[in-house]
Image 1 (tube, helix red, strand yellow):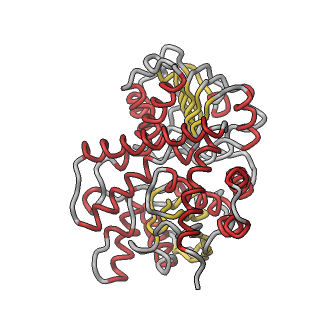
Image 2 (spheres, rainbow, N blue to C red):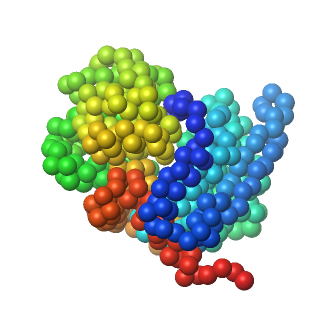
Image 3 (cartoon, rainbow, N blue to C red):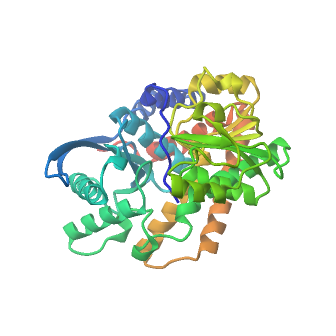
Length: 423
């Protein structure tokens, strides 16, 4: 299935947003000043500028990043994105979010993120491979199965992970499948990994609807971003009886009050390169989909989509964040006042990193589970994590994002205090 599509984000500083969200949780936890300051900084940051020879013989220099936010709970985990708008502050923010995401679902990982400033659609497959292998070589000193395990993100896919795994293995002189996750199954990937993030979105949407007393059967769903996360979430939500009424990607979208078939939309997208132009409904823009008449909204594109400018126009009762950071703090406040339940990214889209953890464990022990076993384990973790975050939300009388952050930050802070300060 196609990878997450790019939607132009609102120009805000994602690092400032991440720090603002962290500060809210830190205030509630009354963290000691030293712990708070420590968790406010990435542990390490690497910026690389590297040349790639293109097919026409010219050489172009690309900039890439790899950031480790925290190693307190274990090796770092986080995706690599290829996108022309990648910035160091974006990667910092996403690395911090990965720390909280892993912690909130109880994984033994810290957070990391990587990225290259590039539009992968402008490169041939051979050029993309050369870029990937050179970038992997540049960050080799940071990644390993014991220290930092990359995964796919916006603009990357299992093939890119295969190239990274092979490059790392060539440097070591033997195969190291556990150095990345999200790989093809033929080289150590996990059953259920491609569907994992979308499946996790479906599970928490179901649990949240149950909490709200909102019928799941027949619930209208709007999806922004019809890539890997959004398309799979749409397929699985429809299987659960929901009605998919609106879908968009980077080039537009479609709306039909009577419902859309995600499988037909995928077939149309494979042929046309976009869901726009699908004849099963009326045209809709990326901005419009956020305001579509629906019960459940699934923003699955890029960050900064729901803002103070459009939050009061959202008609959904429930927002389940398939993307990272799609809702700004200002929008969160508006949605909370309007009693819209937002299941935050660090919980809602944690299915991907959870099954990435399963893949890593399977690679380390060279023993693999069936897709049924993977999905059962994912179901247990997502349901348990949702209920735990909901419990914190009710106990502290805060919205779900703050509750998830409080739970995650508390776990990391407890581990940090227990470990102590070296030397």
